[in-house]
Length: 336
Image 1 (cartoon, rainbow, N blue to C red):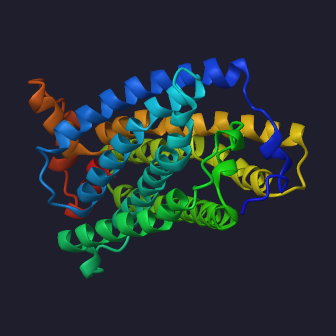
Image 2 (cartoon, one colour; image 1 turned 180 degrees about the vertical axis):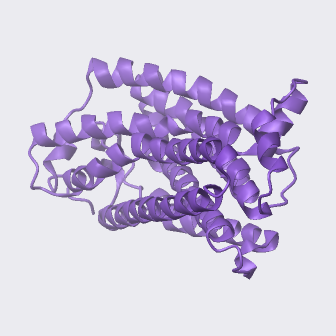
């Protein structure tokens, strides 16, 4: 059975006006914006054919963001203490797990997009099954399956269902095996993020160099292309740094504060507040991803304008397309 005295943080109370009013209010805005933007993104992507690997991956991110957004109302109600304590149990056992599953699914697919762009732009002569649509669909299914399998025990092993165990810390509902699995999955997910983040830096640095070296021969439009490429890469990396780096810097010490007796109550409380506010940044990613689709994915932008019956300004793309460029480089500037 779970030893309630194993971690002082379990006997701390984290309930303040910040956690019951301020944070739920912020999540309300994120939920409204995220659900609206991702619903529009899903509506547009339904009309975009899956002709390229990166579009398959983007569609998976849209699904992950939508599912992630749907968990926000449960957190809002539970944290604000509007609903009964049974909802807090539901959040700890199910809703929070779904939130994290979809967050890391989205992170993983952004890594796959970086990998796909890297090999199609930096190594255009490299042909492999990994670039086929069928492979993209298979690897997408595998990612969903693996992360669901990894996270499912967090639902099953959260079985110490006793309202007295809950003080704002979900670990109080876990048995001993559940605590160990909780630590294991946290470290795996942290590793996933940092690996993807490092690979994105490598991929997009190589892409930027490749595009710059390919376009510098054409003085007329090299500056335009260079600015566009740098903008696209900067946007992706800015979203990752802003939304995910702060949370993953504090997640290891926070996990230790949940499962170790080395942290006193004030330290555990400080880590809890740090985790909650950095998690808000991660949650806000659902609002920023649709903006990324718009600026970085030309098929998405074209289809959106078509559905809204607006005229897409394509002067930049037209100028590039009229130049003597390879198909690979032209694709990179439109779908990076």
